[in-house]
Amino acid sequence: MGGNGVSGPSFVDNAEYRQYAWTVWTADALDMESAAVAHVATVNDVPFIVFRSLSDLAGGGAGENELEVFFQLAANNSARVMLAFINALQGK
Image (tube, rainbow, N blue to C red):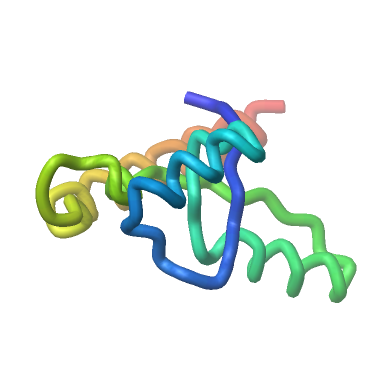
């Protein structure tokens, strides 16, 4: 849990690019959506937080992309973290 994440405009399923992102930015996670959320929220002066859960290995798996295998698990995990965060906020 935790680490550096980077966001960009394309789906990454390439082991060489995954290694490049690690070498340049020490990126533990790559995603397509977080930067868009951050940009829209920032230009509209809306506070935001992004919860991410990884659904594949961005080209790091031995075979085909694992997105289909882990998509539901990743969605469920992200929702659990978000709900725990909201519950913790309400407790303050």
